[in-house]
Length: 298
Image 1 (cartoon, rainbow, N blue to C red):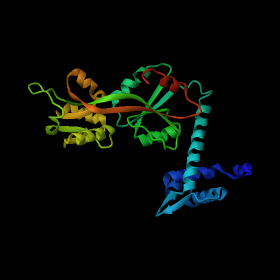
Image 2 (cartoon, helix red, strand yellow; image 1 turned 135 degrees about the vertical axis):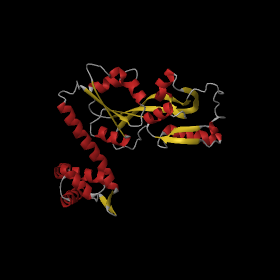
Image 3 (cartoon, rainbow, N blue to C red; image 1 turned 180 degrees about the vertical axis):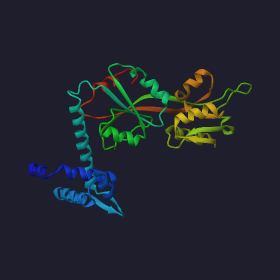
Image 4 (cartoon, rainbow, N blue to C red; image 1 turned 90 degrees about the vertical axis):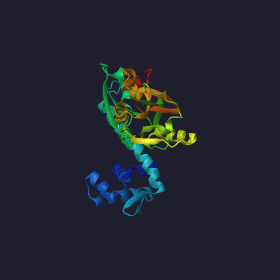
């Protein structure tokens, strides 16, 4: 009986279902697959017939997964991820000596942190480093289809991601207030001077911004905000050139502090930025990734 069911299960049906589930729309799925909408609908109906369950329900113009559809999607993710792994392994010969390490870094991640972490890999004659930048969602999708080996992020991944992942904290950085020299003025006092200081802050998508807001709430303070900036590179430039006070992880402005362009006013209590290395749980792991993950700085 089981052999008969597997014989009837067509992986083209499953692939069409996978694309529709991602797009949540028949027309967009058909465009992605370069086939007609009716062809997609037919493949989905055939899969539903084989499985004996509806996989989607209509929600206006969109399609929403049923309970069984959600279950099937989890299996589809695993099947196509394993297929991509198979192709990558075969194309890499015996899979024991892959020359490239493909690293994705979240776009808001400190460039200084990335450079500090990856500096030992640059110039390694046995390794070709490929570094990409995008949102965490985009990077996870690339990791899912084996176009990345490793993601560097300042946010952890949740356990309910359909791709089995390893998320390891690799660093923890202090967060501080920095600004121009206060020569001729009194030393900055925290928290007394905070309410009267115009601040450059990370945006609300930042974990350290949420920690800072909670700190201000606990202190009964309403901070004066002159700008909110998601991108750490831009926040670094504004901190350096605007003359304002910025809240940043110390690593972001390490060069400006070393050169005396900026001064550290104070470290913020109980606020830290965490950095994570995210990899996929796979049957095969490249030699390059193994070597990197075993380094002391990881």
